[in-house]
Image (tube, rainbow, N blue to C red):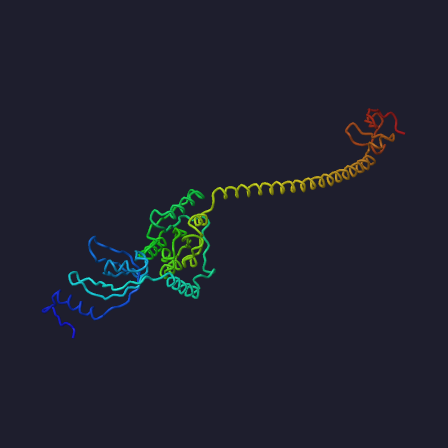
Length: 381
């Protein structure tokens, strides 16, 4: 039967604590898998406290054990190591805290770790998370680069210095977090979520130096891989050396072989771009010069053709004009006068066409081919 309580008859803290301890004691011994986040030893004491963290969630348990038990495994247990613990849950009455009294530790061997990674690899591949069609292109010139790396790490320095050497105006939004150990997955996922919410961040780089399979284990963690796959921004993975291929490398939009290589991928090289622009300008100048030369040749040909046609038109016009002048000259009174004829006019200027128009004693003007004179009519015959 459960404990019967009411506002009028509440249970004492010690009673509840004792009942919880009894219920937890009934669980018996269990096997637990996790990652050692911290080992605490006090000088002169045979007891050690181990913080055992879940590898996929931000949860941990306190494990109490003998110091000698920690060194019983080969190699001795260390922080960041994956282990299987055999122990018994118990409630510490003084603080009401739950802990595991460890009786045995077994280190998860490299073979088991590799098998787990291969299982996840097959799972993600079946889901299409590694498909090339999911890969997004990186921006040519990002407004701001999100950078996740270890605190004051060489990988952090490599990315920043090499990127600034290529493009001095590059700007970073940096998150320095744990990239190894039990807290790495949670820290990196949180940093990734933070950077996805920062305006003007156009690409995110996750960088870490090389290490053993155990060191790089967080970068094959299912939670982290899925966080990278769902990132709003393209992600560049620069984990370890070229030979290291954690699962984050396969799901990222771009895998860089090293942090230095990542810097070369995220920003263009200013000197190269200036050289490309100069070469393009020179090609344009040469092409324009060739085009202008060709157009000038065409214009010259058109000018010569127009000059030829215009000359022909002028010659034809001159010939027509000369012909017309000749005809006009032939029809002109001057031509008649040249043949010995004269034009007789009265002093009023009227042309005399009939002898009846004049009388004896009249003065008349006579016009000949070259000049004129006045005559007086003496007789009308």
